[in-house]
Amino acid sequence: MVREVDYDIVVIGCGVAGTSAALAAAETAKKTNKNLKIAILERADYDHRGGNSRWTASYMRMKNLDEVADNFVEDMLAFSDNYSDREYIETLAENAGSTLRWVEEKGVEFDYLPTMFLTASKPRLLPVGGGRAIIDTLARRAGGLGVEIIYEAAAWKLLLDEEGSVNGLMIRVKGGTSLELTVGAVVLASGGFQGNQEMMAQYVGRDAHKIRTVADGGLFNKGEGIRMAMSIGAKTAGQFDSFHAEPVDPRSKREEAAVMTYPYFILVDQNGNRFVDEGKTTVDEQYEEVARKIFHDLPGHIAYMIGDQKMYDIPNYERAVETDKPAIVADTLEELAEKLGLPVEQLTATVESYNAAIQPGEFHWDKKDGKQAVGITPPKSNWAIPIDQAPYIAYPIVCSNVFTNGGLATDTNGRVLSQDHDAIPGLYAVGETAGLYYGKYPGGTSVLRGLVFGRKAGEHAVSYVCQSKKLEL
Image 1 (spheres, one colour):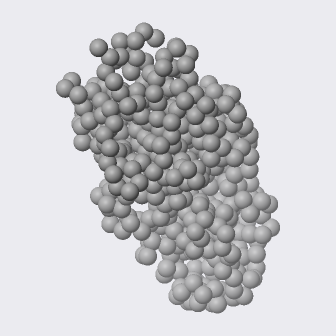
Image 2 (cartoon, rainbow, N blue to C red; image 1 turned 90 degrees about the vertical axis):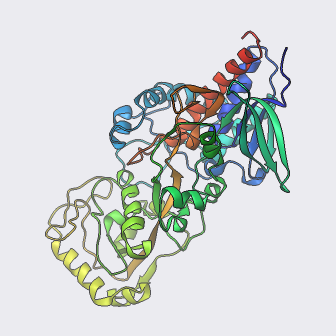
Image 3 (cartoon, rainbow, N blue to C red; image 1 turned 180 degrees about the vertical axis):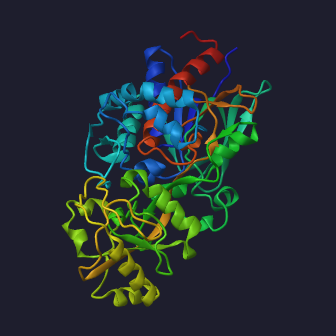
């Protein structure tokens, strides 16, 4: 007897992972002549759908559309101190090219567009139109295959049958009404928990509520997907007390208001002291460490970039200053300190000692140049140029939360694992809901894994549902 369902497959979340899962499921069902009912649940309304995906530029760690960057797997493992799942990462690398070709076939264009990183150690391939282009294209294609998108609806509880398989879902729709859906499988693609202050405090710690999301889309990520699965015995993965961080201008309300020109100048805390080697390495490989240090170590969780008119001589500097707020400008360092509320004597002394420590050498804005400042603490390894050309400029900088690292443990088909490492029947997790990252984030891998494992989960969910319904593929 075939069990009646409201939906054969429900995908929770309309970002890149969710839309790729829904489209892959719909395509697989069509190819195998199976009439399956598939839906996406999205917390936001149509105009705000997509969570983080809507706002991201979607950098991808690819040499070209078919090849991942050199040392892709080993870099990802090394950045995590080997805590990340090797098999998962190898699967990502093996399927990245074919998945991007699949996305391209749907109508998304890719190119090596300019990024905010004026110095970079790895290539970054981008979709033209960013993450929004991906979700709009994949959602449109899924809709054309009969996938229903239900807006302003959030899931809050998974239901199990007598054998422990997921067979139901409690959802809450706009207005507060709660409904029970009978389902064949659920794909959790609802992001992390950066939009949940309680979970941020629980896992990240004190003052975590002060960490702004890098874009408004993160506010929709409330963590229910992770908690629902944990409540039925799901295993977790990823570093729950950490998150992917980015330095941004706190004055700006726009998404990703990054300030990435600081490697050419200095960063100081509220006491006017330097606290980091601003030129440690290329900016794409060190900005996260800097942002985290600002939050965890500095008084008031704020820093200031102190520079001068030489910033405007750096080619394409505008790409690296994504805030829409102007620099704070002053004719003297004393005046700049007063405008920033910093100790005048200390800021002046910091700049003077930095200038005096700069070593001879040729300045190269676009690569590590070995132009150092030595004999000061901390030293500066590259791009040490004097701050002496008034008017002086400053930008305040705080840490923002791009996404949280803790999530659910899955296999390479996206199936959620139990604490005993068995797959929980009928449950999948993809994108930020699936835990992967520890330590340092390997840039350009988050959207990529959302697409790869979203597609794999969608395809596998069709196989699972058809087997459960005793249908032949």
